[in-house]
Structure formats: C-alpha cells, structure tokens
Length: 172
Image (cartoon, rainbow, N blue to C red; front, side, top):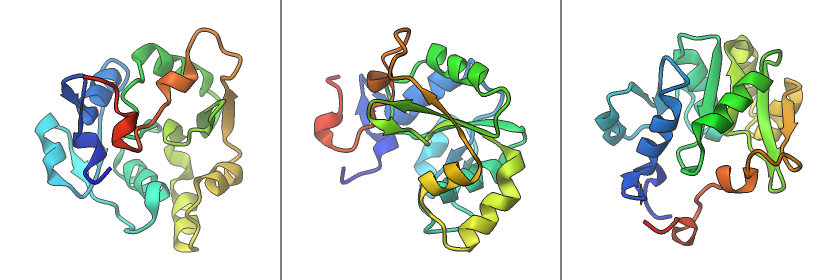
C-alpha cells in the first residue's frame, strides 16, 4: 500500500477506528500491536512486537502476552467490513477451542479469530525456533477452523476481505 494500512481512511474513518468500533461492544480491553505511536489517538495501549521480525505470529504473541484476559479476539487492521454480529458468532463458536479461525472461499483467516492465552508459552517456543507461518501454528495447536463457505447468515467473503492495495479500498 505504501503506507500504514490501519491509518488509511475508509468510509471517512481510519481503518483502525472502524475495527475498534466493531470490537467495543464485545470486549473489555483493546490492545493495538504496532511500533507506530500514531495509533495512540484511539486511547488504547499500543505495544510494539516483543519478538521483532516474526510477522503476524509475533504480533499475536505480543497481544497475548499483554492481554489481561484468557480468551482474545485477534483482528488485523485491514478488514474494515467486519461487523459485531459476525464476531459475536465467532465468539460463540469458539467456546471449547484454544484457537478458532474462520474459513471462507478465499481460505483461512488467521488474523480474525479467537486465541487463548493458554498457548502463550508454546507459541513463544515456536517463534524462537524460527516458525513464522500461521498455517503451521494453527495446525500445531489444532485450531478449530469454522467453514463459512455454506453460511448464508454472513457474507464471509465480504466481511473478511482484507485491503492489500489501494484498489481494494472501498469508495468513501
């Protein structure tokens, strides 16, 4: 994109603002994992990665480390179409799993899921061993993969679409 995705405007608001508004009715704490202090404008704690250069798996580790809760909703900042009803559905489906992630026709979405702090120490060991691929982490922890391809209640392809280029950004 050439710039920080979460700070780009979509529908008149920064993407990170849209994500935080979807989260606020569902969670008691919001943490932002970024080395960019500009995210502090929302009033939530902002933490840089504890283990740099580990990609999304490192960001999840940092979030779980700083989280005061056992169950944690992890979201990427570049999915501005998410809504609270969809995330509530994921929460209900995640009740008995250490990790629960949705699967749409586009594939697995590991940056929209519920993660238990129970995985924290083993997650760190995998990072320190050089593991970086989210698919390997999900397999290691036997993550519950919720297949939404036949789900008519939600348009998972739309809700989970992440913005990877300026062409992906919806019209304001």
